[in-house]
Image 1 (cartoon, rainbow, N blue to C red):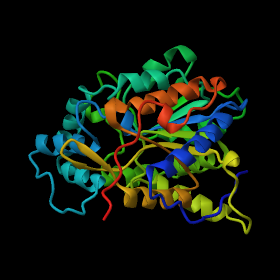
Image 2: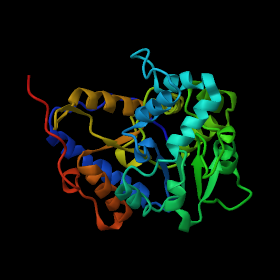
Image 3: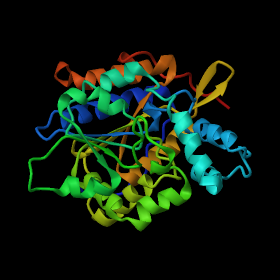
Image 4: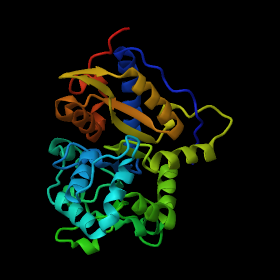
Length: 328
């Protein structure tokens, strides 16, 4: 059992401070990865957003197909935006299938390196076949959300490698009336509140498995931060937070930037706020520069797949982070 306590997050002021902490976090991840019980991968939409520039753009396309305004309130969540399109459920589903037929991995170089990792199982919020195609030679089976908890706790049969599509799965040739995914608010409600199996599954793996998050944004619209924070609160003790080498939840995260034309300026305020949030969730972030087609992320995953070759620092893995903010 793993125990966490909430402590104040780091307060970065310079890039050199990121250089200082990142190798230690990477080394801790490598040690966990090398354990006999292999980790879980948790793959988010950042790895598979297809022809669109992001998840929001995907929902833009659905709303346009349905003839609806893209935004009615600046505070509107992505789930709420998708919910507006469900007024005509048939057209909503047709829009999803139309857009999803164009999807493929956003970055084949990153997906190629992910496919080299030796993992116990994979959890994904994506709907497509990209992961199954990449891991097809390793004996993985697909498990849908309604079966996830039962498949995970099944001790009667040898533990199998599974790809848990926790938000649904879109198969080739699927009809609109067969579509069953979590995208709109009402669909999330059904997946997480009406059927508690999925939350039980997530709580169990977050508590007991080493997990590597890739491509997950940890948005406050998503259920994962709430589940992780509740788990930390439940397991909190009066002792100090566990040492870095005892942590078991790691997330590859792109450094937050403010863009001025082609110039990327590191957003230290967003970075420090994110560090505080990750502390509350019991997750260790490993920051990378998202520039140059995610070259640094690819290098980090490649180094993890070859963990026995040693640990590289963040500035030895495919370029340096973006420029610092302007001093004011």
